[in-house]
Amino acid sequence: MQRLIDKIRDIPDFPKPGILFKDVTPLVKDPATLRLAVHQLIHPFLGRNITVVAGMEARGFIFGSLVAWELGVGFVPLRKPGKLPYEVHSVSYDLEYGSARLEAHIDAFDANDKVLLIDDLLATGGTAKASCELIEKLGAEIVACAFVVELDFLHGRQQLEHYEVHSLVHF
Image 1: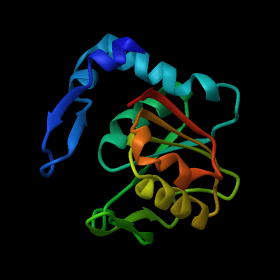
Image 2: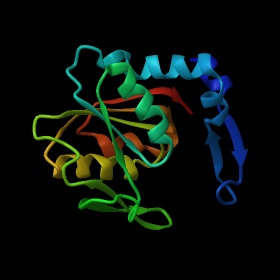
Image 3: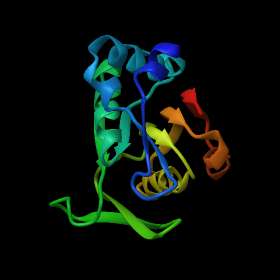
Image 4: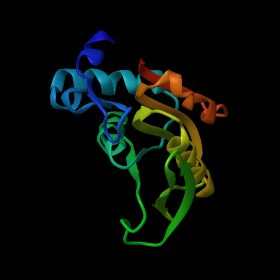
């Protein structure tokens, strides 16, 4: 995974002082490394009957869409409030600096859907946990959650203790 690590840029003090932001933009820009990341994200789930991939706004859309393409299944975007044009279900969740909400169309999932949740980064786990709650609220089953980067020191995996978690790179 060193190839992936080499393409993840550290941005100090973003979005606020004291935060070391892990920027995956250089990874996404490099086609060979992006392809490697996508193949490593899907590898454990080949043959697992995934029927749809879901991704959280915004970088989850990048990786999630590519994973869905490679698996030959559809993609469902989990959006910030006010971005979806049809009826939605939503889930609110806490952040270290406030609260947020995710939404999905009420018909985004079928009851027999087996979902692979994808995002670029697992930090505290709040957004991923809320995403799982939203998907289950809409009647689908979470097969697993997969991330390009996991910040182990923030213990986000604990928020997802009831789900299989797969991360490519650990910091």
